[in-house]
Amino acid sequence: MPNQPLESFEYDNPCPIRDVLDRIGDQWSVLVLLTLQPGTQRFNELMREIGDISKQMLSRTLKHLEQDGFVTRTVYPEVPPRVEYRLTELGHSFLEPMQALVNWADSHHRTIAEARRRYNRE
Amino acid sequence: MPNQPLESFEYDNPCPIRDVLDRIGDQWSVLVLLTLQPGTQRFNELMREIGDISKQMLSRTLKHLEQDGFVTRTVYPEVPPRVEYRLTELGHSFLEPMQALVNWADSHHRTIAEARRRYNRE
DNA sequence: CCGTATCCGCAGGGATACTG
DNA sequence: CAGTATCCCTGCGGATACGG
Image (tube, rainbow over all chains, first blue to last red; front, top):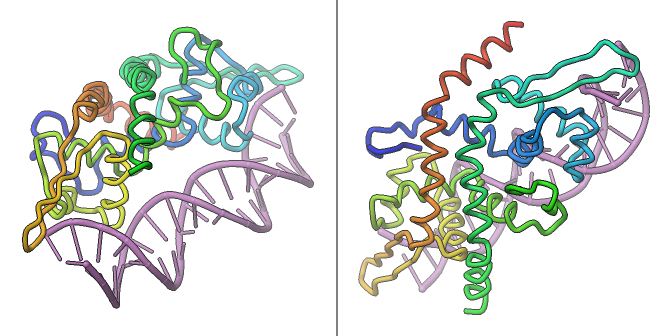
């Protein structure tokens, strides 16, 4: 996914931009990041907040996000255990353009739904 | 995927923003849109330009994009047949925030790759 | 409470052959 | 040239049970 000079970009593997966008383009990453935007959250808080994500997928998603540096994971040696997740600078930085895209989707989903209906009628 | 008031948003099905983002969040949609950004393209031109997409996936992706109003499809009754695809206003409009995200990925993929390596060493 | 391990079903997508 | 139809296989992700 190139920028200005479309031609100068390599679609060949490995494409770092596709690599990044594929990673956060999965079913859950963006939703998890947005849920973490207001501040620190614990694992089960995220579960409840998101609602329809399984433990496994939340766990995997958080691990990926931590691995890529979007999120930090802090374990408090207590009983019962407490683990807190929060966005890094990189995570917040990512949410800026992402939020713009979310806003776009929010503004245009009616137009899109309308286009879909029209297409299906014809 | 909410915006300002995170709480006011419904994660329940159907969520129109997730609906929109899921649709263009598939493996190919964004790449096809970016490839159409410079101007009109024919089917096989898109194939060659993108390189690693199959006919079937290009066909499906274009149909979805047309259905959602991102792209127009124009058939010229010639022999051999000629079909041209081009972005609509909606398509161009979408690419603005999307381009910002692509630029972000371009700017930060080294940082991310570095984070990944560090994570894997520990 | 915070996860991982295991099993499993199903849909996304590649390869190929065929059509207008 | 511009697709569609068919086959097939991989891997994503849900459910469940178990571990620290």
